[in-house]
Structure formats: structure tokens, C-alpha cells
Image 1 (tube, helix red, strand yellow):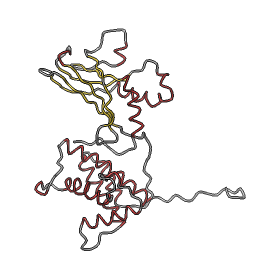
Image 2 (cartoon, helix red, strand yellow):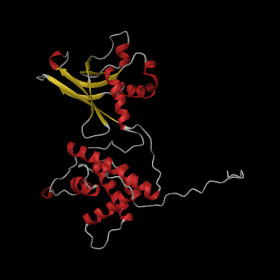
Image 3 (cartoon, one colour):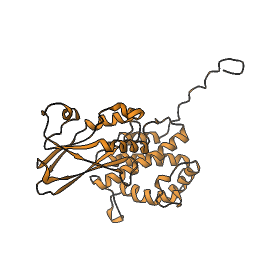
Image 4 (spheres, helix red, strand yellow):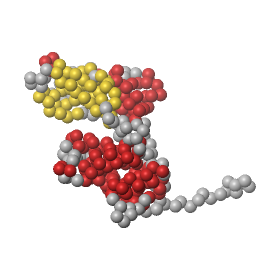
Length: 297
């Protein structure tokens, strides 16, 4: 209302202006392969930067990218995730650490020209995925600032989710079996009618090196002491007898526990001749409205 009590209608909704970068962004999100996802996300970035600072006739690709990123930084675009050396110019860091090392390695197959990132390589998949996550954050930021694009924002903070896993660590164990593993409910039931398996202690290693959204639980198995010579399934479990003692944190801890307790990790490990087996279980935070991570290798 205004000062006289009259109802003031809200301003008319103005949809974000159409821009070609939206299509590249959408194709990145819909891609089945992480390399296709990355290529389209970088094309979305190029489209946005060309809107900010159009490429001039005769201007080299790297020269234009450097100039356009400089304009973007002046508009408060955040290139900090690409800065490996503290104090180094963020634009130069992006060119060195990302454009030359990742973008060119994904877009080109000429191994004679230097490093290439090839589909099917687990190491390359990991590099491209984490660079895609950082690149998408930059693109999203520019779309919001330039076009007022409405992108969903919610979910766990990475550090907060890691703290929750740390709180569960004392009550976390690893189940392993030759074919399948029992569930928590089967272990607690007054019956022996459940799959063969053993329970192992685990330690919480904390955040996986080089990531912000992955954590590691570790278990070391002495194979000679196992009642079976093959592991066909694993299950990370967390159990608290009295959930009321979790207090206010229970609303966050219980869903994590329930997800862990029903998730079977299928494998095929022959332990013949193996003295010790070290099992690392990666726990990855995937916010429903966050960047896509589930790409094919």
C-alpha cells in the first residue's frame, strides 16, 4: 500500500530476454556424456562473453577470451575457483589452468599438440567433471547478472554436509558378503535368516583431496580372517538405537542414514591370494537443484 492506504499493484512480470546461451546451457544439462556436457557449457560461456564483449575482426581467440573475461570480472564474475596460485590475476589463471589445460584438451584430439582428455578414461572423466561444475557456476552467475535468469538455489552447503557425515562416523560400519549383504533390519531381527556377510569397522577420512563435495569412508579388511573368498556386495550402514537423542540434527541425519542403509554397492572381488583389502567408499553430495553430476564415463 502507499502512504494513503491504497493498494499498489506489483510491477508486471517481465520474462528474461531470450539469449542463445540458454540453449547451450540446456543441452549441457541434458547431455548423457560428461564431455558433451562440458563442451556445451563452454559454448554457453562463449555465447555470454560474446554478448558482453563481441569478438572483433582479426582478433585472436585467446586475445578475445582474455579481454571478454576481463570485462566479465569487472561485472563481478567470480573466477576464484580457477586460481591455483594465490595472488595471480584471475583471468590469466583461467587461461592457464582451464582454457589451455582443459578446454583445448577436450575440444581437440591432436595429441601431438599436447595433453588431450579422451572419453573412456576415468582420470579424464574426473578432471572434466569437476571442471564442468566450476564452469557451470561461472555461467550461472553471468546469466543471473546479465539477464536476470531465475535459476533454482537450495540444498546443503558442502561443509555442512561433511560435518553431518563426521557426526555419523562413530556409528558407521561396512557390511560385505559373497552375494548380497543383510540390511540393518535383518541384523536387528531375532532371526538368522539373512544373507551371509560380515561387518567391518570404518574410519572417516574426511573430504576427498581436490574436491569440495566428496568424502571418504575407509575400511581395511584382513582377507585371511573372512569366512568367504569373494565379495559380491558391500553396504555402508549407520545405526543409532534411539534417534530422539539426535536432537534437532535428526531431521538431517536420519535421511542420510536411511539412504546409506538401503544402498547396495555391487562388486565382484576375488580375494584369493589377497592379504589385505582396503575399501574406500565415496560419499558425494548431490543437491537436487545443483549442477548435474550423473554423466556416463
